[in-house]
Image (cartoon, rainbow, N blue to C red; front, side, top):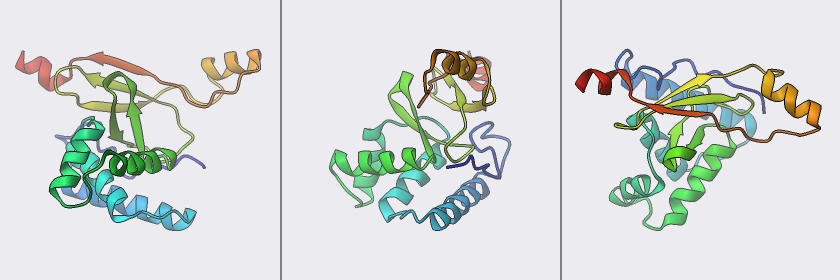
Length: 166
């Protein structure tokens, strides 16, 4: 599936944009791609993505499940994990390994190789592009005859807000 650019880089600076508009644009983008690709965005899948878009930070599956439970959309862990699995495979959500949590993709779709800047205090996640295809990692893999399926690039530190508050 080719990379898809979301109209608004929502997570990059949550204070510098129209939050409601950001969510609406991202959801319209996802709806269009699901329709084009024949993917079914069920009410639970939709709500999980909305929850991630609302927070602009990484959330654990159980945090998401708590929200779903409170809204009457499911109370068992498989509900959240199935929705997250679908959203990750479709390229709309990323798993943040360091936090064992999930964040909405700001460059929705498969095929891009993002890096994540993770605030260790507030868990805000900033998605940023890394090397382009054919970069150092891809070249090294090709030379070794290795086919990269996933790559995790995460850096932890303090975001500007947390640094200012310290």
